[in-house]
Image 1: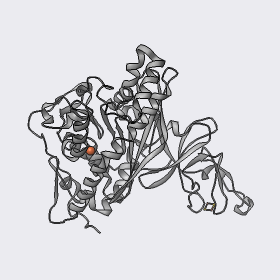
Image 2 (image 1 turned 120 degrees about the horizontal axis):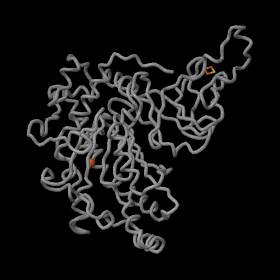
Image 3 (image 1 turned 180 degrees about the vertical axis):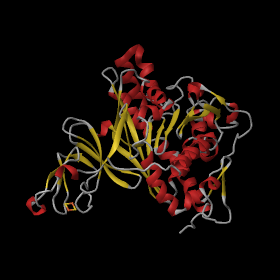
Length: 432
Ligand code: FES
Ligand SMILES: [Fe+2]
């Protein structure tokens, strides 16, 4: 158990430091699961996970169980997974196809748009019974280029406005092969982190740590494959390198490594079986093969969509908080589908998915868990967020974004500003 904070949020979240209780306090965690995850557009699923009418996946909005579904016309809905009779969940499967969600308790049934369509022995409710008023609760839902978000805040601006420059960055990430559509691969890397969810988001735009946290991976690659291979630019005084971090607005943050990558495929670390795949791609595409091989490689972008979607390289990682000190992380590999893109490109993208989540992410997970352990000490209260605060190195960069050297803590400061805004908002959240 942690202690409730004695200080108001303004004292806990300062520009140059934040209080440890934000990572350890159970009351703050409960509040942020409601206010932060319910009060903004929160990522829930990708449209490729819902391929047909009546497809559904089971997810959480904060800790609220929800169903992301398509109705019979293919329209998206985010349904609160809570029977309007006595409150039981009506969907108890992770994914599938269902025309009806039938609550196992007394068999009330709801269609894939959430309408109540069946009540056993209905006459027992008498003549005024209004089924139309008893559909499943809903969240607002919107999708941008396949990424599905939901909110319980009726006052949130539309999704594209909220994403701001992040929408353009998603376009740049997706349009590496013009005309391709993105598909999440079915298998996932699932990880359990014994740490607070914000440690993961903090790290997602932390350009200070890679050369140290991932030293063994980087050294192994350098020794085997020579300098110039993927991620070698994270070693040394990276403030003198070409990477940057940016505040994308509304809590979204970004590390841009693209200027460090001269030729994507040539800088790739070797992958098992790559020679045969490369030969097949060259045989099929001829002069276009180099461009296709380049999209195998990570994008050089780490785009973090507040509060839970991390677009990293060619993968996406979703942060799923469970308890104040327990977080689930799911890494999805992605495929690009286009008539002129051979299957071997996606086979190689899968090999890449096996790389960093297996050999790099364990370093990060170990640090998240050790941060949680260290943050349990009540007498040591503060976490620093002050790197490059006042060093004069920040500037207004591309897309009007505040930009700084890659070790700048400006992404942390951007996150906490948005977090505090949501935690102190007086907007009442409601189901539709
Ligand atoms: S609780 Fe769902 S039908 Fe009774
Ligand atoms: Fe890392």
